[in-house]
Amino acid sequence: MNTVVSLKDVYKSYSLRPHIRGGFKHFLLHLPKYLKEMKQDNTFTVLKGISFEIKEGETFGIIGPNGAGKSTTLALIAGVLKPDTGTIEVKGRVSALLELGAGFHPDLTGIENIILNGILLGLTKREIKQKMDEIIEFSGLGRFIYEPIRTYSGGMLARLGFSVAIHVDPQILLIDEILAVGDANFQKKCFEKIMEFKKRGVTIIFVSHGLADVERICERVALLNDGRLIYIGKPKETIEKYIEIMGENGRN
Amino acid sequence: MRKWVYYKDLILVLISKEMKVRYKNTILGFFWSIANPLCFALVFFIAFKVYMRIQIENYIIFLLSGLFPWQWFGNTVNSSPGVFIGNANLIKKVNFPRIGLPLAILGNDLVHFLLSIPVLVIFLLIYKKHPQLIIWSIGIPLLCIIQSLMVLGFSLAVSSLNLFFRDLQHLTVIITNLIFYFTPIIYAETMVPAKYRPLLLANPLSSLIISWQDLFLKNILRPSLIFVACGWAIVIFFVGYSIYKSLEPKFVEVV
Image (tube, rainbow over all chains, first blue to last red; front, top):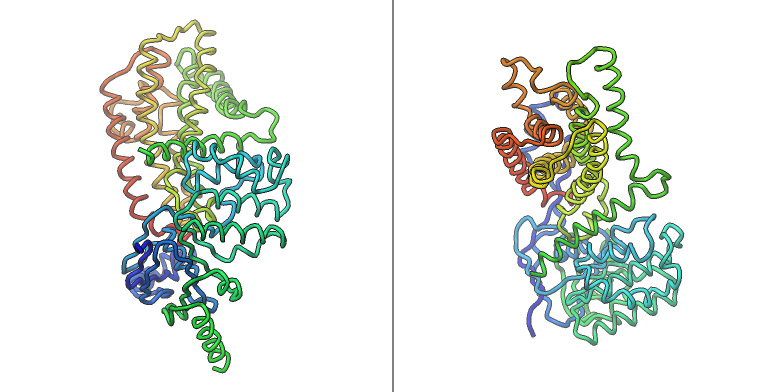
């Protein structure tokens, strides 16, 4: 099996003082202090040397407590963030379900928003037009598709967003906690769609706090804690480790 | 190959979104983009022609031939500070070429400018001036390319820097207002004393706006001025683009 995603010794930190704060007067009066601070290390390190590989067709889960660096890892694989040091290699078209309905505009109709969203997710106009019927069908929005989306309910918006995202025809699918949207029916539909992708050999990377979902879907799971990779292995073993460290954290 | 089709589609879709959204739920729609320069032309006409007796013939069409291209410049540059900040969520969550956003604003204002040319032609005809098709069909695309490069350069610089230095959005409005009065739009280039001429041409907008006036009012293009405008456009574009390129990887963290 080919490796499609590989992270090697990835470090990622955020600057705590990205723009000049406190106004211009403050800036001028405290210029020496500012210059000194700029040189100093004002960063918060989220990932501290993460390395792992994901094979083609694998369903890979990432779990860990809040602030462990799960979402940052996904954003790095999606290419939204760049690592400070270390390398990330991704082979194949990535569809990142980090945000449903990216770029949706309330005054545009469902169809207009499908085109806008599809373009931002990396499809050309022709590819979107080819998939238009399927997207509308899956969303189950019926005649509402011709109405401005400000008339939609939250659930309808989520359905439209999810429907576009899964029709991008990804080779690698990133999913961040989005199965929590929509009603039970739509969740079931999403889950079926994910299983269908899995059958088709799409590589899936799945971040969730829902340990039952992780155990059900994933073949291999990584446990992150405080920016480090603690454990990587079969879902059951990793989840046991996770519960173990959560217990320790709770005691401390 | 697919990459270029994608870029083209991205920009076209974003432009069409801008166009649809801008005048959604307004009654007069596109007319508003013409109304602004027309109103200013009227006010300047009363203030400078009627009250102050400025010595420029056909002052209304002189004003319009400078105000329409200025409107393009002003609109794009003044909306630049919000280009990335206004799309924070998109930048944080989706990996797409960010340059599409300022390009869409530029494209939208360019289309509006092109649509205002027929209005200008009507005014020219009223004043018995006749556009010469050949020189216009060369001049308009040429000057549009030069102005697009220049405006894009400014736009990239302002939109990128504003993420790190938010005061820039207030500064931008003031500076574009000041540049307006240092550009020969309400007065003619010939009225500027010879010793201040270098100062006039130090303003990147001057040579460009004068070229538009040459084309619209006299059906001529002066190569020397085009050359200066072109030089400015290339320099400004490269400065703006390199600012964008060097800051772009950090956008997602500060937006």
